[in-house]
Amino acid sequence: MKLENLRLTWKGLIPVALMALAALAIVAFGVNRLKQVSATAQEIIEKRDAGLVAIVRAANRTRDVTIGVLASIAYDGDAPVGKAADEDFKDAARNANAEFDRAAALLPEHASEIETLKARFAAIYLAAQEPHALG
Image 1: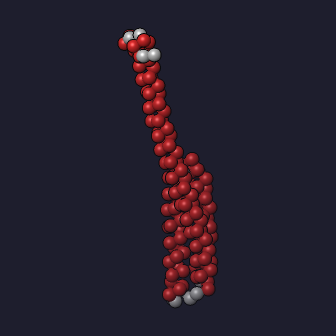
Image 2: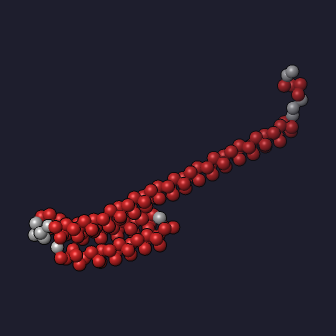
Image 3: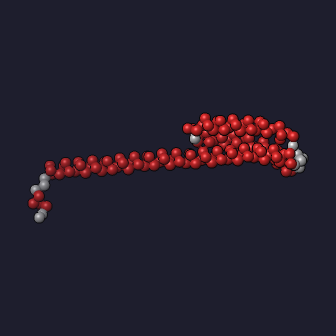
């Protein structure tokens, strides 16, 4: 059997060529859409990871407030350790607020919850200032 025996004409091949082009266009569209979805998913995942890191750092700064209070009571304010504890106490609030803001920017769907945590931290810091002043 030879190709000439099939009696294929150019007019008969046009629908086959159009179907092949349509299939190729569908595959190209699918690949393009898959790349877009993958890029969007990666962006979401990266922001979520960075937002969670910011929340953990803010939690560590909250811990630094309590450690600063204990250190200010335990050490003399004129000693280098006491001065460092005082600076750490003051820096904890500034750094925690910056991390809370960063987390809220990275995780806008949880911004209200993060603002609640920020307000709770502000209340803790305000309550810790009195015992810190005693040290």
